[in-house]
Image 1 (cartoon, helix red, strand yellow):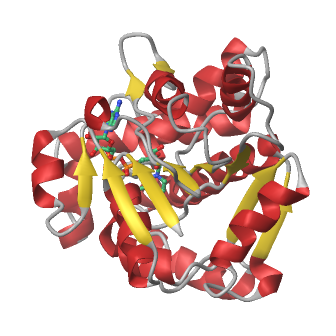
Image 2 (cartoon, rainbow, N blue to C red):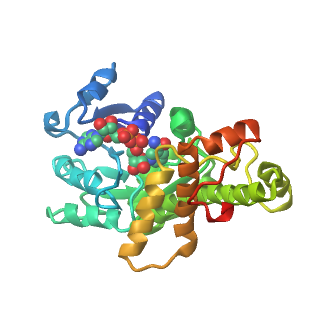
Length: 306
Ligand SMILES: NC(=O)c1ccc[n+]([C@@H]2O[C@H](COP(=O)([O-])OP(=O)(O)OC[C@H]3O[C@@H](n4cnc5c(N)ncnc54)[C@H](O)[C@@H]3O)[C@@H](O)[C@H]2O)c1
């Protein structure tokens, strides 16, 4: 298959390298000269250099950062890919949105493409296919996914992408859902991971107050409560969540909830607890305290510690 990858970062490279390993013909597009230069051995272009082309699949792997000034998640980079896509619709491609996007973004993309006198399900196909890989083990995770989610509006779109992925995973772990379900699944995945960390940190803070070891508590609870803790990747109290996705997606989703007048106090508190832990880590108190188990000074913002 001819596959085009738009955005060659963690997700784009894992997707492109992975499909190339499986024998597909992969081309990359990226705005960064350095990224293009480092893609030795692959066809790689800047967006303005790509004049057209017949691709069976076009994967959108563009960033969705959190805009701290506007206090909302920035979907504009993903949305602007419509300009490039409009030049690539001749071969009835299947467009696959891999970026983590807020609910409604996929519909927006389809509407913009249909405004060019093209019909989704006939002239092009659209799937929302969120990625769950971890940055550190990106290619390995892409090649050995534990779940594949395909959001779509019609069977042809689903079958096209399903056929591309079917050797990657057992059939039972491929989920066919709507576009909005796929979008929300990815956010729920990140929010749930963030919530587990904040919950563990909340218990860790309370335990500190009592002079007991919160990590020991969570270790025991991992055995007592159903499915509460993954021993391999399980959380430890004392450090905020970081990384590329959890902070931006948690904040981005909370501002989206606010814009849509959806009240969700549990989700808001995930971020509030993380802010407390971040402040403690900045002061190097939490890190030191975790390291030696002795040093402890309450943060002024930590209500539990006052
Ligand atoms: N990093 C992860 O672990 C991870 C995991 C799952 C999902 N995601 C999601 O996948 C998406 C991509 O994340 P990432 O970590 O690969 O991002 P990244 O920042 O590593 O890569 C994005 C790439 O897109 C390029 N780019 C930016 N604007 C462009 C444009 N207009 N045209 C062409 N190229 C452009 C950048 O130069 C960069 O190489 C995000 O929505 C992210 O939330 C990331």
